[in-house]
Length: 351
Ligand code: F0G
Image 1 (cartoon, rainbow, N blue to C red):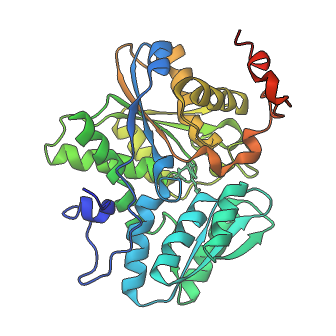
Image 2: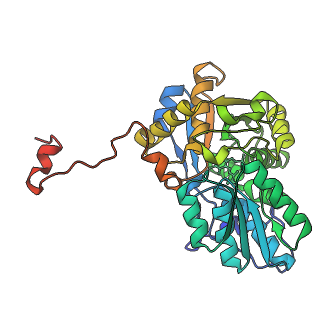
Image 3: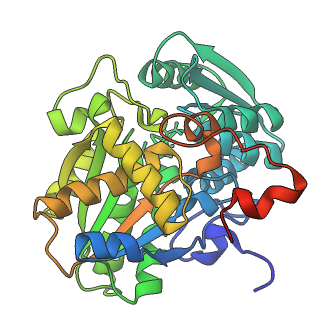
């Protein structure tokens, strides 16, 4: 196809939208599922990466947002609102711009990555920063939407999760079967719930025999599902998943239990190790939160919780360019080497 259909058209029989609705799409979905040779060798498994940074605004949020904004426009209300650690706000502001809707975003002050802020700014969102964390922002967004004519487009809006199911379907369609294990970073816990719903739907319809075990990974400083209780002051380098009280808690626990899966945490050091390894060894540049699925893969493979020979898909949820500041911190050579025009080969030690 020359024109990317977007996920509503690609899976039209599985994604209900209001009759006569104008579909708001930026050609999301259809993202690469690629082999990860280095990770496969390290873990003794067949590892694939579902590269969601290849979506129009650089994260998986676009799959849910095309559905949420299509519904919001059809409802007749003229404005949408969301709370966000950054990616939801970038996606909502882009799709709202395309639909001609006003978009308001509530973000935790000083805790959203620069690329995401740049997106919301350029798409013309009304950006409100709150002296609090994501959980505080979500509470404010819910209250505002309950009392005023504005649609909430966070993943507590159920149509968001319908759209996000499509990633699981794409993986099954590409592999011809479901993987044995699926690894995801978990923040507000909508995405793991959506993947599980997607896999379960394909299994119920006989398109795959067995859905995968769902492995959800959180940052150690923001790991409420691992501890079994909310974290009042979540903190991690992976700002996208800096969430202390996930809205889809119950759905995520159901996904884990029904699939014989697990929740585990990764330290910031382990997340940054996986982040560096993805970029240097697999050629895949992701944002820190996205590397949490791979950090978790390495942890659970090393301690035997991933049987050798398993087929494992790790979703890497957002593009590395989202967070340039973190990319240039830490153990990397940042300052380019100054060189005279005649000394390039010598500088590279090519001769
Ligand atoms: N990875 C990235 C890059 C994210 O932006 C998020 C969530 C997640 C993983 C976790 O997904 O919340 O469905 O468990 N970001 C939200 C936001 C919170 O506001 O952009 P989840």
